[in-house]
Image (cartoon, rainbow, N blue to C red; front, side, top):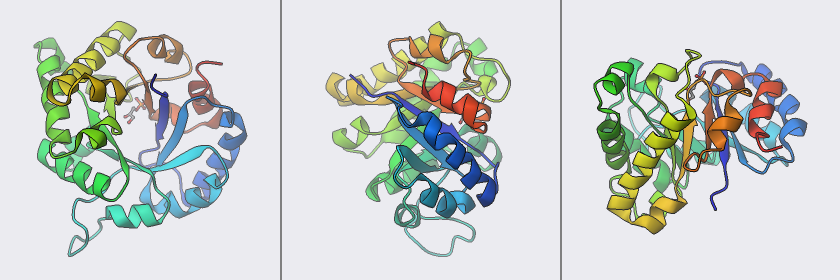
Amino acid sequence: MRTPIIAGNWKMNKTPAEAKALVEELKPLVKDASATVVVCVPAIDIPAVAEAVKGSNIKLGAENVHFKESGAYTGEISAAMLKECGVEYVIIGHSERRTYFGETDETVNLRVKAAVAAGLTPIICVGEHKEEREAGYTDALVTYQTLIALTGLTDGEVASAVIAYEPVWAIGTGLTATDEQANETIGVIRKAIAGKYGCEVAEKVRIQYGGSMNPKNVKGLMAQKEIDGGLIGGASLKAPDFSLVVNFDK
Ligand code: 13P
């Protein structure tokens, strides 16, 4: 049995003071969650949120990490820096980074390796554009993105990684993949992992759905066999909404 994992991706929202206030509001609302609860926050908010989550069941995540250990990379943040600040999870390869910041499958893989080497759990994002789904390429694309991202990891490291299947056309649009579409594509991702790393590893990997997940559609999605959680954008910015998603089984 895989423990569900519900993670918020705040994207470029919340100042440190707003971040602290949101976490303080969230803490009592999610304290009895059976899922792993993570908030992935802007880098500048990390110290405030690290302090605010102390003693709670909320885990701290970052939204990106650089792949080098140190050096002349102005504006970037290393895995060791995140780790020292209390970060446990890091989103890697979000479609917004692929679209706006030149992220490629190769740099996603480099970031995943750097994160894992520093003891962070990567939340690796994969997913197709609308045109790719319509052309019938979804399965091939998510298989490729997943296998490239995981290249170079040991079986154990793959087993403890988190994958987020986020169809790009469903992000921030209010459009959600149907329960069946999400389940089917996540099944394809698990099968790809099984083909390369074996069934035992594939059965351990937690694979989330992301894309307009909210209090209304969470139950249907989470009832699907292959779906182990969610990566939540807009609905993670309000404590009552996020807590309803986190407590999907209550
Ligand atoms: P929305 O929930 O706002 O669609 O965002 C999803 C997402 O991109 C999470 O990483």
